[in-house]
Image 1 (tube, rainbow over the protein chains, first blue to last red):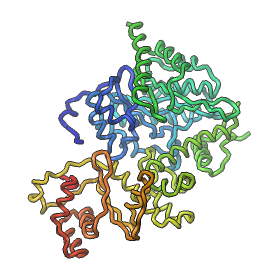
Image 2: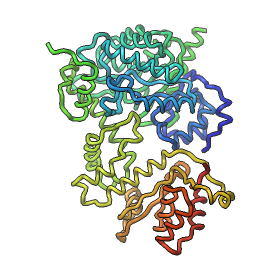
Image 3: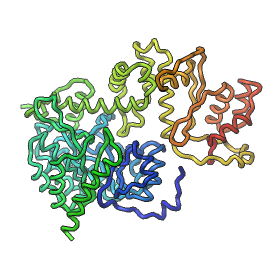
Image 4: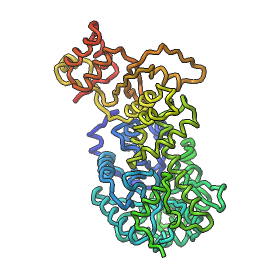
Length: 291
Length: 249
């Protein structure tokens, strides 16, 4: 499938609004042929890091009809030793080529000493880690020449030498770096259970004006351990508690674009669209309410 | 009192714990209801699982040939010997064929590394850049120019019937494998959203391999004729054109 320079150049960057879903391999053909009624699509940036392939070809078409979000999982912003300039350069090239309305990655680290663990690993909530994250986020925003969003991650452990809470760390990072916040409401809930804090207080501590996007996803409950642990598996429908927290988040930040994430045991497209409809109803209710 | 680790020390310790290299990271992890070890285990399981699933997706025929348990053990050992070097996973697994060749437990399956290499090349074909095919009518005008073949076109030469084995390994149940012991020379390329493969005769293989290296038709022709004096260049070029493997630029 060929790149049509004329249509791409003529098309303005469109920002997602309403509720989007992830564009994943099992749904590519149906999305291309049926053009489902969904507000926007999210793609994992790293899935586009090869020179070409089926996903590249599909996105050339999808982006003509839908706003896009490029969501990264591999920038490893919080690595203490080096920052992967090549990774950032590849991301910049993708942003230029596909003109996404939103570009994001996570408040985490994933690589050290040249070894990538290919996961979203927890940072210690220390001043040292905060300073590093602020520098790195500013570096990314400078390279991209546009606003970049960072997302709060789920975690299964915290560190003894933390100097602040997670919500203080996130809020301070956003404030000092000037980037946008991708507020993952499911991750707030998962961490509130895993580490025993008040999810409502966390939401209230977020810098409301900086929230550019919300993520919703399903978690799984690990039952073979000595205590409850929620795993951010992206393999299930959104939990009732998370829907409630989402409504609360909308009250605080207004109707920001929202993504339904589903990355494992991916169901039929209809299931994702139904989840998106449910979120859209809450979002619309809020739009009417605030109008 | 022990001084808290710097971020660098903490992350090095974390990576060591994830790659079974020991260390004392657990003392810095809040235990509460679950032990630090149980919490770290959640991460090491997730990291191993992501990387092993990546190898499963890249190497389905190898997995079918050796069975799930052997594959998982090999993949686990591979990821510790060849840790991922990128934040994206498309390049993870590139040394798996060479790694399998060093595994004593796999020595009895002499063809296994070549099957793995074929699967790695399948992935390279699937993820190669796009290019515009040359229209057949323009071929005669451009033959004197450097010939550019499609970036998704890859070649593999094996002392084993590697394509026949791959097809057997990935075929529905009931297929029977008949081998005559001869090696195969294989071309792979992207055809739509699939990867196509074909076994080539030695002269055609040499012609295409030389074209990829030199982009010079005369050199490729001479190299192919040295293998087989009856080699027909026109037939080989027509086949490449028909499959849209000669591209502009």
